[in-house]
Picture 1 (cartoon, rainbow, N blue to C red):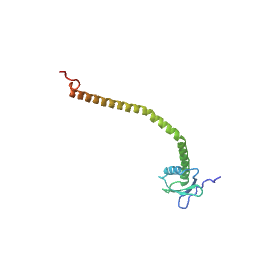
Picture 2 (cartoon, one colour):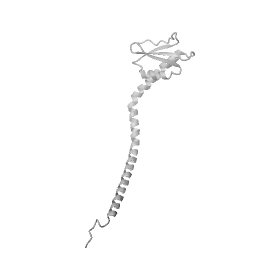
Picture 3 (tube, helix red, strand yellow):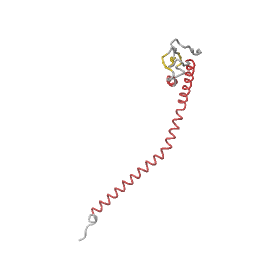
Picture 4 (cartoon, helix red, strand yellow):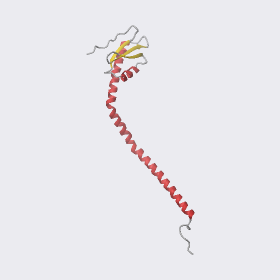
Length: 148
């Protein structure tokens, strides 16, 4: 079993945290670190044997580095849980979104079909008008022969 983390403040007023890359993904570490960018300078590095080293440097001298490091660990756990749930629920979310979109689609499809039908009817009316106009121009002489 691994020993608990050391919360030792270094001479340069920084703290090194080592976390297992098997437990926390890089995505999780980025997300947790992002929350602390206003209070900390954060440096990430490869550690030994599947570890990721996280160096925390306070932006102000009045920051309680040990408390902030504990908060960092809490956020790691928070985001690890979040990303695990997101992966677990991804298929359900996808199905819900598809169902929501497809429930709207029939109405949209009907509107498009109705619009296409109206356009086709207008085209047929134009064709009928053109045929009638052409028939009038030719007149009755073309349709029947005169008797002598």
